[in-house]
Length: 147
Image (tube, rainbow, N blue to C red; front, top):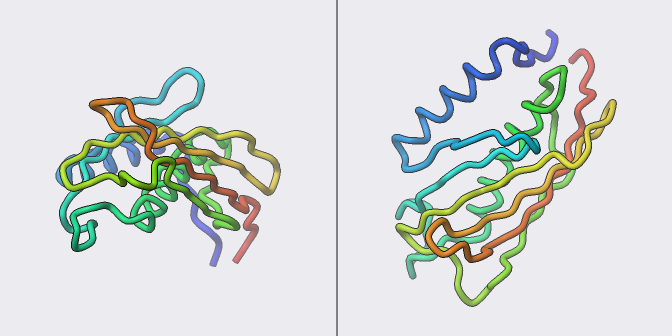
């Protein structure tokens, strides 16, 4: 069996399908800017929050993983999804994590894509105030070869 990657001409189709799926859950990809930044708007639902109503860092890491992977696929000419080597995120203002109903904007940027490794970063801001919430970094192995 060989690894199956998204074909070049189907990337937009998959991205728009993902947007429709996420809009039902309160979010969606909003734009792909000229500087290769993919923006994703996400309304924090109650199901991802802990008992006090705040969004835990683990949920932010999961979103950083999703958004940076789509950004990487969009920039890579071979549309390789890859495998995560390193994934990290940190809250910038630890005393005020996002809460239920907050609208967050995830801005994922591909820093560098090489033959076998890709580096992505992501910044998370509140849509209403522009407050900087979190920052994440993602390193992916892209050269997967035949499986």
